[in-house]
Image 1 (tube, one colour):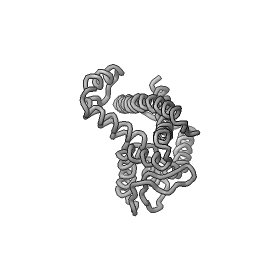
Image 2 (cartoon, rainbow, N blue to C red):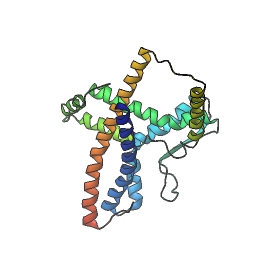
Image 3 (cartoon, rainbow, N blue to C red):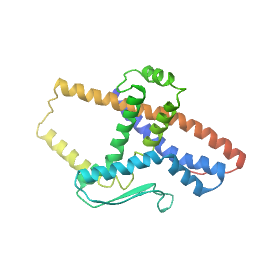
Length: 242
């Protein structure tokens, strides 16, 4: 059951990331009527997440011995409907290291959200949703609570690897699937100790908590943005077709 919850939350999280990036621009356009302003607003709103995204690329690349070049934070050139909020020039290497560099923003983003909820609300591995609700509700009047929730939104909406980040993943996935299939054919079966099983269960519970936090925060914001976009769009007759 927990595995199903994990994948459902993961899928919803991916959907909300794309939805929010599109509709933040849509809301800004409905208010201002300026497409350029809409793109700049998205960049400024997501700036903490953009900094973490590109910084994680740079850090991991240097840690695993891949040379980096120019780091750019800001709007890049438009390519059709796509544009960049930041970039890091990284030398070509092997698929494994390129995959590690590409997935770095996602890993660092999850760790940042987990640390934010842990240090900010004392929530490290809660097992009950009511624990999360009680912790946030009890501090809802504290401005730092809203800063923490904004940080969760900004980081999670920027942490999904871009298309270029995912380019080498196909090779790595194929290699691991091939190794796994060969191991099964040869009769190998994993021998998981109770300690390892307990560790994996803790990891799964923690990931469900982090994914759930992101879905709740971003889902609530998506409802607000959707209502505001509809309202301003109706008043100004400026609407975006997605």
